[in-house]
Length: 241
Length: 349
Ligand SMILES: Nc1ncnc2c1ncn2[C@@H]1O[C@H](COP(=O)(O)OP(=O)(O)O)[C@@H](O)[C@H]1O
Ligand SMILES: [Mg+2]
Image (cartoon, rainbow over all chains, first blue to last red; front, side):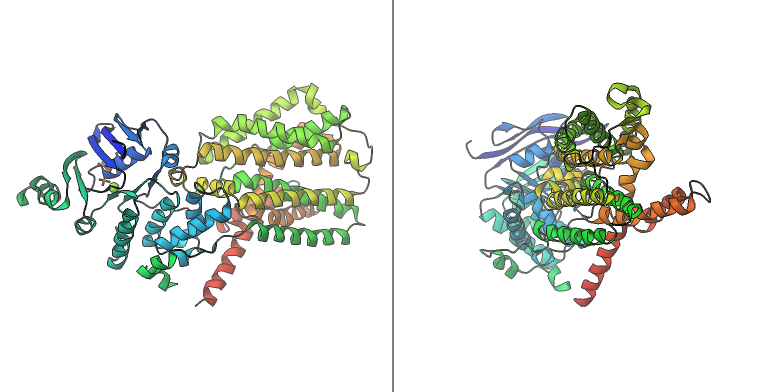
């Protein structure tokens, strides 16, 4: 149990009459790489928001590094070691690309020069080094996605949570991100990745969790999970199952 | 530029172990140097006009309002919190200076309690108000300013009520009272320079970047561990303290204060915002440029138009504000920066 990092214990989120996340449980150890998949509207982003604190749970608990963080604010959780990206990139549009990563890097260094060096390294990691001085509002969609990763990385998180960062990227860019995720994972980082593209999920390997209508319907290694009739049904409809 | 968009594995490799330079980051040093250079130019210009008392009055007002608008810009521009209650901090400065002067405390020393009081007041009042966003925050701060105007008239012991307060003409540097307006112009230039240096430091520091992050995207800011309220309160307290310092100087310049002079919504409260808006909200030099344009223009308009059509200078000012809001969202400085960027992009191919 010593290396347990994240325990999501039966979390539920209701929006009025709609149950977006329904009693989902997830355990992650230090160094795990988990892909979270499921059809549109399944509740993946909502689950992310419950884990990082952007939304408060209706029921259930979230434990991180042995602490109950269910009542903690997103900023407190970020300081504890949660790094995340947003599905709809939340770019700091009036600031430069470097300054976007810098606000994350300040968590590690109070000194601006040192923080900027760290931020620059994170930009290089996602291939945005040459865009450092550009106003982030001028970046393309794919660049903004990568900037989200750089900003979260700059925090130096214990767990990095990526929400569909590959949507809208071209195949070369997707390969580069897969490469980056593998490198970060090899470096010991724990990752939770929401991904729509099943090819990417297969490429990442490791553990997959599937949610549909807010409920966890399968979990395991990609081959087993992706051949599970319920998963095929959720993705392709009943007649294929 | 296109080349940079495709990421290659080689860029990953290149990142390893390389000492990354801080491209895309303007340092405080370079901004401070610009502030000093600008101040020297303004100082020289002030010397040229020193014989003309009428001009020195305009110059003193211009520099004072340059400093005040720059102070407002720290929370209003960098932090995006459109406060209309800054007249209250200004009045706290003015009244503190006047009351302490009566007790024999000179205005230089009065700066300290004036700034501390304004910062404390700012924190207490802003705490609940920061729950409001955007225009609702603006409206609430306007209500605070209105309320304080009423209270200032009521608490005669502290403010002299509607009669106002004055201090005797006791010239001397230690009293911050000068016979020559040129000396006030220098004092105000010193104030504007100090405020600009502080704003430049904030702009290029952790606090400044956090304020901008909070302004641009609150959720993104929180996701990297920024406490929104703490950052906004810090920015507000600093902005209020610097505004109060301007209030001290202003009171010693006029040697007379009453509620309308210090707390008027149109003449004081909205003016900081108006100057920053025309010059360029959220840019370092916008408020200075705005003051250099607006304050002399206003004096001139008042001198020439007020006799012909009373109040017409306000119509011209209001009109230019509307034009700015419509066509120059980032003010004169924003326009200049955009033009410069466009030229840079063009020359890069
Ligand atoms: N803030 C909200 N208020 C109401 N309903 C929401 C809110 N956020 C998400 N939902 C609903 O919850 C469900 C799950 O959404 P989401 O978590 O975004 O799915 P996914 O990320 O898997 O595509 C959807 O039906 C969505 O419309
Ligand atoms: Mg989603």
